[in-house]
Amino acid sequence: MKKLLILSLYLLIQSSFAQQLNIEEFATGFSSPLNIQNAGDERLFVVEQGGLIKIIDNGSTNSTPFLDISDQISSSGERGLLGLAFHPNYQTNGKFYIYYTDTNGESQLSEFTVDSNNPDVADASSEVNLLSITQPFSNHNGGCITFGPDGMLYVATGDGGSAGDPNDNAQNLNTLLGKILRLNVDISAPYIPSDNPYVNDNNALDEIWASGVRNPWKFSFDSSTGEIWIADVGQNEIEEINKTNNAAGLNYGWRCYEGNQVYDTSGDCPANNQLTFPFTEYTHNNSGAFKCSVTGGFVYRGTEFPNLVGNYVFADYCSDEIGIVDNTGNITYFGPFSGNNFSSFGVDQNNNLYVAGISSGTIYKVIDESLAVKNNSFENLTLYPNPTSGEIFLSTTENIKQVELFSIEGKLLVKNSFDNNSSQKLAFSNLTSGLYLLKFTNHEEETATKQLIIK
Image (cartoon, rainbow, N blue to C red; front, side, top):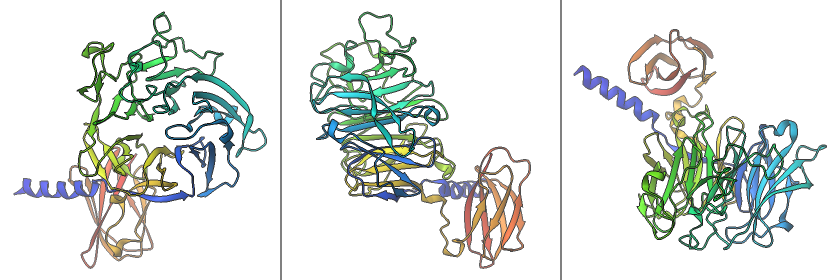
C-alpha cells in the first residue's frame, strides 16, 4: 500500500512535469521569414527569403532593415537569402556572414560588417565573398550556417537538387554538394582549418567536414554539450534527425540510405560500419497529420521552462506540428499550429526559443504551458528568483495555508504551514542542484504546483 501511494504521488508529480508545448505571437508582418538569430544582445534578427534582414528590438520591428540585398538574389522556390551567422566576436569586430542564392542561381557565402556609426544597420558595401558553389538544380541549396563551439563556421550545402541525388553528389568528396563544410574565417582565403579531415587527401576537397547529407535545412549545436544536431530533409518517406559528437569525417549515408532504410546503393556506397545513422527519424504518415519536411531546431537550454531542458525541439513544415526529441530518441508532437509552415527556429541571448512561420509571416515564442498555474485562484502566485540557490520569495494575494516541497521522485522533503503575507520568504537548506516541486494548498483545500530549480 505504501509503495502504491508513493507511485501515485510520483505519477502525479511527473504529470505536472509533462511538456504542454505551445506558441505565443512575438512579432508579425514579415515576408517569408527563414531564419532567426541573435547577436549577443537583446535584439533578434529575422532573415526574409527575399533578401532583407530585419531587427526585432523590444518586441517592435525596426522600420529600416539591417541589410537589404534583394537586388542580388533569386528567391523563388528554395532559393533566396537563406542563412545568417554572427561572428563569435561580433560585439568587437562587427562581422557577420550570410548565405544566399545569387541572380544566376549559384550559392554564395559572404562576410559583411556592421555600420561603424549605427549598430542597427549593416555596411552594404562591405561584402567579401568567401565561397561560391555552382548549383545544378534550383532546389536543395542548404543554407544553414552557424559557428560551432570551436569557433569555426559550419555551412550546410544540400546535394544540389532534383530528386534522389542523381549525380550522387553527397557521396562524392570532390564536390561541395551534400556536405557540411567547416571554415576558419579568421585566417586568409581559402579559410581551410588545418585539422579538417581531408586537407591531406588529394581525392577530396579541403572544405569538407562531413558528407552524405541530402538537404540539411537546419542544424545547430547544443550549447551545453557541443553535440551537433542535423535535421536532414528526406526524399519520399523518412525525415531524419542526426545527433553526434561532431567528429571529423562522418558520413551520414545519403543517397545510399534514406534514414535507416536503403534508398539507392548503385553509386559509391561505403560499408555500413563507415556510416552514421540517424539518432531518430519519422515517416511522412507517422502519428496523425501528413508530414513532409523536417525543420531543425535547438536543444533547449533556457531557464524559463525547466522541464524542456535537454530536449531537442523541431517542427515539420507540412503538418505544422512542433516535436520534442528526448535523450532516448523518442518523439512527442504538439499542435498542429495551422497556417504557419514552420521554416526556422532561433534562440535569443537567454536561450529562449522562437519559431518562424513562413506562411503567416509571424515569429512565435515557444512556451511550455505545463509551468502555468492551472487553478484560477492561484493566477497571481509568483516565485522569485527561480532558479535559486535555496532562498525564494513568494508573492501572492491567495490565502495559502500550507507549502510542501517534493523531490522529482515524489518524496516529501518539507511540509510547512504558511502565514499569509503579501510577500513571504521560503528557505530550503541542504538541497542539491536539480528540479523540485512546490505544492501550495489554500484554506479552500485547492492546490497549485510550481517547479523550483536549485542551482
